[in-house]
Image (cartoon, rainbow, N blue to C red; front, side, top):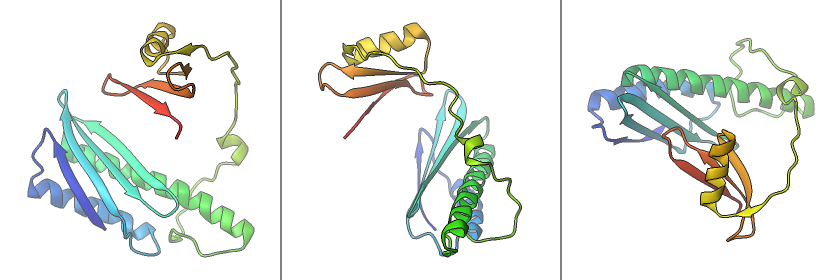
Length: 181
C-alpha cells in the first residue's frame, strides 16, 4: 500500500508514521491483489482528543474510518479494528452475492473466518416513513429549523438553487450542506 500521511495541528513523527504503516499493512491479508490506490491518513488533535481518519479507495467501495481517543496510538489501533470490521462485512456481502450468481472470483481473500451473515431484511429493515412538504428556505433558516427540532440533519428546498438539500451538524460542532450534482 502507498500512504499519504498528514497531520493537522500535530507533527507526524517517524515513529507515528511507522506505526500507522505497520498497522495498516495488516489489512493487506484481506485482499487478493495488492491495493494500488493511495491510502489517505489524516491525524489531528482537537480539544485534547487525538483523531485519526483513514480512507482507502478501492475499485468497488471506499473504506473510511475515524476514531478519537486520549492517545494517538490507541486511536490508530481502534481505526484499524474498525476498518477490519468493514472489510469483513463487505467481503461477506460480495462473496455471498457472487456465490449466488456465478462463483466469480472475489475482491477479498477467503480466509475461512466465520462471519455472521445478516439477512437482507434484517439489515435493511425500514421502520418508519415520514412525509412532509419542503418549504423553500435559505441555508441559514434550514440550520435554525434543524436546531429548533433538535435533529442532527434537516432536509429542505433551497430557495436559491431550487433543489432539495440537506444540512447536518458535524462532529466538530460546525454545519455541512449536502447538495446534488
